[in-house]
Length: 441
Ligand code: HEC
Ligand code: HEC
Ligand code: HEC
Ligand code: HEC
Ligand code: HEC
Ligand code: HEC
Image 1 (cartoon, rainbow, N blue to C red):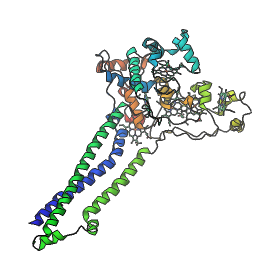
Image 2: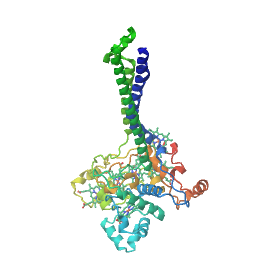
Image 3: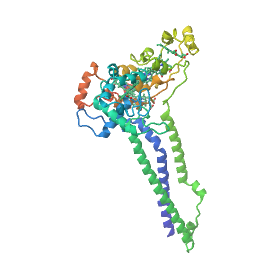
Image 4: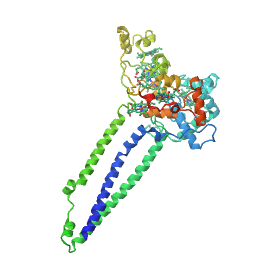
């Protein structure tokens, strides 16, 4: 009689329960890396809601702030933050300084506002070393309003003392990523709840078992029941048992798997990489303070695939007259004398399997260098600003509109697209920016 009860408790209940407990624990343990992998492999899941259709009713306020965030991150973040001064001023409280009408004009073409003699603009321009803000002539008033609304929302988000502002997420991570985070957080809480409940059940059952055994020890029992009732919890037997071996094996494999997976995920990602260069060349000085145009040195950037690193001769255009006896430039003079190239250490490096073309993005796509390379003109030493992963490329292709104005090549395409898609904006994905063969050959 007791044998049946015992079997039921141990084999039917306690064992399966412990097993599911272990499985759940492993799932929890695995969860972070799994979601990370999904984010990188299937950026689909984290796409923000599509931009509102032109002429449709005004979207809900939250949708606007969401759009403002994307617009801000794609166009302004390279130079502005809400709470801190970057290349441009901190945008916190900007509406207390200027009204929306002024801000519309400014964002569309700041040079025009400065040229008009506006005293506030002139003062600001001087204060920021006459750094010219990018013009956004194609922005509509609603789009600028969306950005301003987003700034207002962010104003309340005072950055934590550790300096991590809420907008420091890497360039690729869009709004969707955050929603993803909270979703996984929810799943995690649920799983933890399960684990806790299962754990309690196991404890209660174990207690019941001891009580039953204690009770039975005072009773007359037949041979087999007696054997079971007197059975002690035997550590050795547990360790030797098949189930224990399977569980331990499973845990070890999971651990190794997770470590390997994490390793694979981060191979080749070198965000922040800033090697020491043979000559202490400063972009902050040349491109920032002296405002030398990027194209002056990176001569290929508008014409071809590679931006090119300037030859020593380009440096000598100036340094045959400027700082001619600086010890910091000894290597440069040596290189010119011996007619040898300077051995700059490459910072950005896509693997050979991927094809990236600068002129496509800079000359045709009209993107700013800073969108991908960050505030180079503030960097003493160049560092890799973007992750340069496939997810990063794809994310931008999903979200960025093709600049078609004045580009005859696109006229037909735009017409076709508009007929098919109800005048929704044409994104890079719509011209084939997600096709494998465009980036891999
Ligand atoms: C290439 C860098 C750059 C980009 C990109 C940029 N700005 Fe600016 N912005 C500046 C600089 C620099 C100033 C300071 C004035 C000056 O030097 O012209 C400025 C000033 C401003 C001001 C006036 C701030 C004040 O305190 O009155 C506003 C508003 C502004 N920017 C909004 C934007 C918005 C919105 C975007 C994105 C759509 C944007 N900026 C993109 C560099 C940039
Ligand atoms: C006076 C010449 C000069 C100007 C102007 C200049 N650069 Fe450079 N740039 C260099 C040199 C030299 C290197 C290689 C050494 C280094 O990495 O610092 C370099 C390296 C870089 C790199 C990293 C290349 C790599 O190895 O992956 C980037 C990105 C870059 N520049 C972007 C810019 C941008 C954007 C601008 C304009 C805002 C600019 N540069 C203006 C000379 C210049
Ligand atoms: C368009 C002119 C121009 C070009 C081109 C140029 N520089 Fe300069 N460079 C300057 C000026 C101006 C200074 C600052 C001089 C000063 O501080 O008085 C400077 C300063 C420097 C310094 C600091 C020297 C010191 O003693 O503090 C280094 C190093 C330097 N440049 C390296 C380079 C290299 C390498 C290149 C080529 C990739 C280059 N420069 C191209 C104008 C130029
Ligand atoms: C759409 C993103 C994007 C934009 C915009 C962009 N770059 Fe790059 N840049 C890259 C990527 C990706 C690489 C790495 C390319 C590789 O390894 O083949 C790179 C590499 C470079 C390099 C390293 C050497 C080389 O020849 O490739 C330089 C220098 C550079 N960029 C300068 C610039 C300048 C200057 C601008 C603006 C005129 C600019 N980039 C705009 C993405 C961008
Ligand atoms: C900041 C946004 C941005 C990023 C990041 C970006 N791209 Fe692009 N890409 C564009 C835009 C905009 C165009 C459209 C240019 C045009 O009008 O042809 C484009 C076009 C292209 C095209 C041509 C597509 C076609 O169908 O004609 C290729 C190929 C491409 N990008 C590769 C890459 C690769 C590889 C990376 C990552 C290393 C990358 N891009 C990162 C914005 C971006
Ligand atoms: C917009 C450009 C772009 C498109 C479109 C694209 N890739 Fe990639 N892909 C990249 C870049 C850039 C890398 C290098 C990423 C790195 O080094 O982390 C890459 C890496 C890879 C890798 C190497 C493994 C890895 O994760 O590093 C594989 C496999 C791959 N892509 C397959 C594909 C397939 C299949 C498609 C079509 C569904 C595709 N790619 C579309 C840009 C692109």
